[in-house]
Structure formats: structure tokens, C-alpha cells
Image (cartoon, rainbow, N blue to C red; front, top):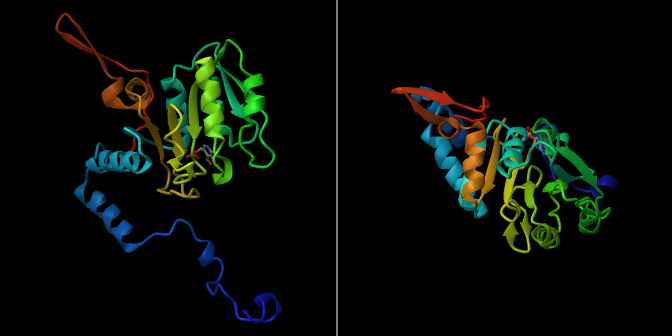
Length: 249
Ligand SMILES: Cc1ncc(COP(=O)(O)O)c(C=O)c1O
């Protein structure tokens, strides 16, 4: 390179703004796929969502994937799924988007903030351990700005104290921690897929887990087939639900 563009040399990137900052990138295959769903007139309960959950889970290396209306809903389902409830505490890094923790309060739990590592902006495992009490039920890990958190140390602390780990992967889809996809290391993970994220589908979210019980509880929280409990009383079928619906097509 002879001369920097700044000093009048040739530009390495020739695409002009705002085109170069347009996100997400939409191609013809995506437009055709969307049009096909609309044309088929089957907006709810589509096989496409089921296929997406399966493929996304396989890409991440987890057993189950459960699509949600947005990342906030997937995070709330993950918190409910690990049993977070009235009187419990959830530890959360002190820098994140609010959805990583606010749903804990909807469930009657308290959010306890832990320090972050100033180098990585991720949860500082040393400070995390100091925040654990006999009420701590869950640890929220946020792979902030695509920097994977120190998962080995966090999982060891969680195991020692018998606490569940939820990963918020909203900023880090596809990132690897020691060769493993983030989102497949904790007990459950949730990710936003809104249009500003690296894995962007519009409004959407995904929950991932290997744990059958966590998956079943997430279904119970916001997905119709799971949340319906059939009580057969005098030949009448009564449907009981938790009143939350967070499914997508
Ligand atoms: C770290 C993090 N977690 C959760 C969310 C919430 O996701 P959504 O906007 O899809 O509800 C966001 C969204 O910006 C986020 O940045």
C-alpha cells in the first residue's frame, strides 16, 4: 500500500455509507422463503419454525432449541425453566442490556449485580463467587459485545454451589469459547435475534439447552403444546395454562 486513503491514496473499501452499514443483509433466497410462507397461508405452527429450531440447535451443538418472539421472552423462559422464583437471587453482570435481568423480577426473584472484568467486560468470576448466598438460584452470563465470558471458571463455581447458569448469547451468536459454541456451555442459553444482532431474523429469540427438564419447563412457560395441562373432570377437558404465549410462526 503506497499511500493511506486518509492522505489521498486509493480507498480499500469502496462501498459508500449508508449502504455499507445496512444490516441485516437480505438476499433473494430469504425474500423467496418469506414469500413462500406467506403464500402458503400457514403463519402459525409452521414446520419451518420447527426446522429452524432443530438446525439452530444442531449448529450450536445442543439437543433442544425453542424459538421465541424475542430475546427478552427467551431469557424469561430460561429463568423460569431453571426454577427461578419468589425469594431467589440471580447474579448478573453489572454491564448488559436490561433484558438480561429484568425478567427475574417478574418471577419474584432479586437481581444481584456482580463486577465485570474491565478488560473483557464479562462477568468477573472472582467477584461472582463473593456474591453467592444460600438464595442464589441462577447466574446470568452475558457474552457482552461478542467477547466470550470465562466459562470454565464460572461453571466450576456454579457446580460447587449447585447453581444453574444461563447464558445470554444475544451479542455473540457463533462465538467460540475454547472451541465450543457459547450458548452450549451453561445449563440453558437465550439469544436475541432482532435485526441489529449478528444472527438477525427481525424480532425473534432462541432458547437452547441439553436438559430435558429445562426444555419441558420452557415449553410450559410460553409454548402452547407444553403449557396445556389436561385435567379430565367428569368427561370435560379443562385446559390450564400459565397465560404466557411466546411462540413464533
Ligand atoms: C444482551 C442482550 N440481551 C437481551 C436483549 C433483548 O433482546 P430482544 O430485544 O430481542 O428482546 C438484548 C437486545 O438488545 C441484548 O442486547
